[in-house]
Image (cartoon, rainbow, N blue to C red; front, side):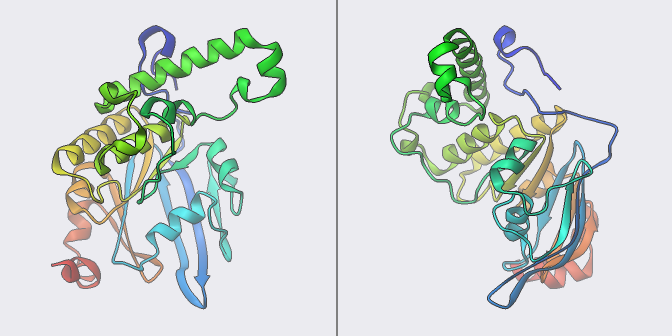
Length: 275
């Protein structure tokens, strides 16, 4: 789904695939993953609805980040299956999963040393013509056209997240919250169909947290499917259409924010501990 020609109007949200008639875009079935004999995921099964924001919450050690790692190909499961748009992606390497449209951010942002904010975004897209020897030597016109289009998109994203004035600043000089926004923008440069966010609110100041919330809402309105792993209940309440509560490596309760927070099992397993 194109949300405008990036060369014509610099719209930052060019979404891979967009909305469809399929209501479930990711199916996770009986995923098991153990580390040193301890099960991080123990028969985890859940569905991710297309075009919605799905929250995954739970106490520390519930398996939330491991689930994202398995989904995105960073960690192979011991057993079980994951389907994306009906096609198995279980155990595929992360770069293949990302190329198919499932992209993630990380709780701890790692800087790309020596790059500016703008260069960090321009490095992100795959299949760039200029990265091949033939392209660099014999397809200079195509390389320049592609690079101009990517630069327009990158500038549009930086304007949207409020970092355009820092485009030429070293990426490592940003605050923690600004780095979270930049990483989110970098993920969007990959043109995802499913965007997985691992604790986007961690270490973020209230003003920048509000900016992240607004961005997630706008992406959802544009048709992007988003999965959010988070402890911050304010963010979960503000952005999520549906929530899965994990405990001991499997879903405990699923529903809306009001439904899961009113459930006594959730209060006992998670919210009561936090309080």
